[in-house]
Structures are given as C-alpha cells and as structure tokens.
Length: 554
Image 1 (tube, one colour):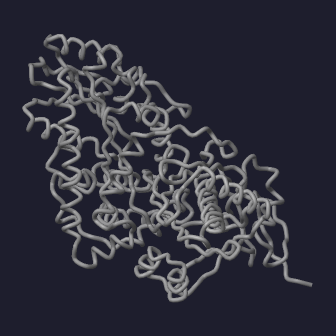
Image 2 (cartoon, one colour; image 1 turned 45 degrees about the vertical axis):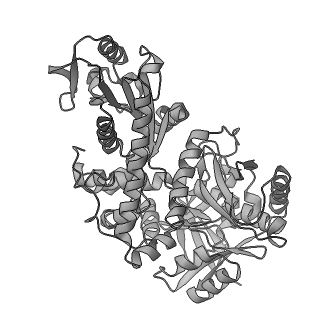
Image 3 (spheres, helix red, strand yellow; image 1 turned 90 degrees about the vertical axis):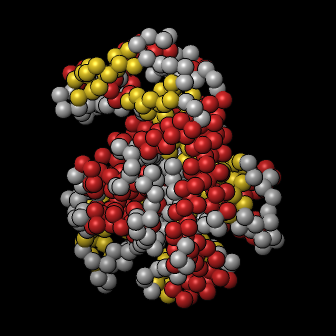
C-alpha cells in the first residue's frame, strides 16, 4: 500500500496518495469556485497544477480571476498559439513571432520570419489551436541544465533566449514542452491545452492579435476595439529599439556589458526630447489652442513631461503656465467615497468641475482670474492672491487625471484644447515570447518614488495598486484615443536603473504577507537585468522623477 499525505484545504484535511498532482486535487474543489482554478498555493508558495504533493501541506487555490491565475491563463494561451503557428507554417517556412505589446484585450504579435499574415493563415492557426484544446495535450515542464537549454534554443533558432541564458545566475532553466514543441516562458503555466477555452485570433496590421478575456470577466471575449493612436505610439517606440539594436533584455545586457550604457541613455533621452519637440510644434501650429490638457495613468512621468513640454513651447515663443487640476478638488467633506468607505480622489465628482470651467472660460475671454490652491492637510480649497490673465502668447498647461474627458472641460471650445495622453508603454521584452507588462514598469516607478518621497513601503504600494488600476480603467483608458498626441515616457534602459532602488524595497516584504507573491515575482523579473547606476542620467530625465535628482519640482 502506497504512502499517503495529508492535504488541508479551507480547514478540512483529506488524505491523498503521495505524488497525486495538484490538478487532481483541484478538480475535487472546482465546483466550489465560480472561476477556473489556475494555480495552487502550498504552505505559502505558488505551484503549478502539474506539480505533485509530496508531504503534508496546507493548500489554497488561485483562480483565473486572480492576478496570478489570469497571467497563467494568458501565458498558456501564448504557448498554445506559438505551437499552433509552428505546426501550420513552421516546417514549410521560416516562422518567428515576437509578442510585442497589449492593445486593449489583445496581445499583438509581429511576424519576424518569412510568413505573410493573411486571413486564411489566421483561420488555419486558430482552427489548429482549437484542435489542440480538444485533444487535451499535456504541457510538460522540465528543468534543463543551462548548457542543454542553450543547445535546444540554438537548434530552434531562438537566439533571443540564448542571449538571456547568458545572464542567468542559476545553472538550470525551466523549459516547457507542448507536443514536441519546446519554449521558455517566464512564469507559471497551466497543465494542459484544454484549460484554454476562451480566446480569439485575428489579423491586425502586419501581425496577429491574440484576444483573451480580461481578469474581471474570465469567460467572456469582448469584441476588439482598434486603438490606432496607441498602436502607432507603441510601434514608434519599437522602431526606436530596433534602431538601437535593443529588442530584448539580452540585447540591453549585452550593450551594458560592452560599456555602452551612457550612450544608450543619451540616445534614448534625445529620442524622447525630439518627440516632445514634435508635440510642441503641433500645438504651436494650432493657433487657437490655449489649453494643453495632459493626462495619463499613475507613474507616467506627467510632471516631468509637463515641464519639458513647457520648455519646448517657450522655444517657439509661447509662454506656458502650469495649472494643477488637483487645486480644484472639492472640500474634503464633499469628496465622494468608494465602496470601501475611503475617499475617492480619482472620480470626476471629486473635482469642482463647474468652478474649473468658469475660471478657464473667464481666462479664455480675457478676464483676470484668481486661481485656487488646495490644502491637502486641511482638505480645503484656498485663495492666496494667485491672479492670472492670459496674454496673446500665454498658454495653460493643465495636468490632471481627467484631462482627456470632455466632461472635465465641457465649457471650453474644442479648438481651444489640445489633449496629450502620456504613459510608460514598455516595449522592451524579456525575450521574443515574454513581454514586460506596462503595469510592472509603472508599479516599480511608483514603488521607488513612494519610498523616497513619502516613506511608503513597497508592501503598501503593492497593496494599493489594484485600486490605482481600477481608477485608471474607469477614468483614463476609455479616453486615450481621443488625445491629439500620445507620448510614451518609458525609456529602454530604465528598468536596469530602477533595479538597484526596487530590490531592497521588495526584499523587505516578508513571507506570509499578502504582497509576498507579487514581491517575489518582481524580484525574479529584475534578476534578468544587469544593473546600471543613475549617476549619468540627465537631470531633466523622466526617470529622475522617481529615483531623485530632477532639476524640476517633482
């Protein structure tokens, strides 16, 4: 008789044969969960369902609606897509894709080989994906010695992964196999193809768009809404990376180790400054514009961008003046509260929209206006004689979360407004099949700044992040395509700089704390980067807004 182990789930203990997979155990409990179980947490550590139980343990489950489960589902869907594409065209032609960036609820994958993306090809690949799902093909994970992994990747022409392996501290690397197809993925994977029941695949521009459910509706594929301005902005940054011959973290590390870090910084900063200058010239060409409305998600570098844009506007003969929408907060006793009873400073109702529009309209009509300032200690709007009147060359640069929402500036003529969307839209990849989510880069920025300027721990930043993201989803992202210009504030080198600041903060999060899993994930992610010091960063760099040393009041 085989040896048994005790597994405790939600306070109830059962015995299982040793080496029973967690997938088998999860199936017993799946009916108790509304969403698909995608991973298991064993004694405070995350495991894939394909792993087996080896000792007495306490277990809980992560579903597709949890951040861990959602990312696991998306990663497995990518593996399924890559395998299906390889089966359909990989033997006949040179096939190679790069997972570029997310567009709405889709992942855009560019074709890097000799394959022309057509509707017919996409239909064939999608059909084969469904065939693999129905066949319930197992996904196997093996730990390979780094030398064996390099040989395997070289045989398949996956040289981006070969470069990455050079910087692995461990002697072993995990490789996934799906029906004879081998690949490396950063993160967890589902145990078989039949878990991927919700997806779509369509041609988009010259590549593919893999459409997946969002975390809040894990069984629903929403219709794809094209975001052409966002796509063009992301493509521009990808082109910059290609020009600098930096496509992946391995490329970046190679150049840093070759002593080119300072050159990378200077070229990237120059490219950003050129783009800011282009936006300034476009604003200048619209002679009726008096209000530049700047909006973007948390940690986008809005303040530094506003200063740099103002300098560029001055070179064109304009006189920019900063206006903070935050100064138009309603008094604290009138601030709406969220579902948890906390003040909701991110909803439109937290702003005195009527007073803002009255003041801006008066300024537009040539009147002198006394502008308010908000006292965040007392929670009251105050007036201290800050009077302003717009001259012929004056222009107001207004930074605020609702800048792209016309309800915020309903009384202002549309031709008097120029709207700019800014975000840190990371386009650097770990390797060609492992993208770096924009939200990861922004969270690291915020974590470093919170610790430096507010004494807020990394634990608290991670804890607050879901609430921050909800506010962005509601108040910013729906309006991004209405912008007259978009600016990507991400710098190709910045994660190599942020690494030195973020790692000590993340190590401060203890095992057993709810934020521990996210901290461990981020630490593992930062291991891929060779760090560079911040000494050579220009003092007007957007990265300075987070690590310190900016020449602007940020």
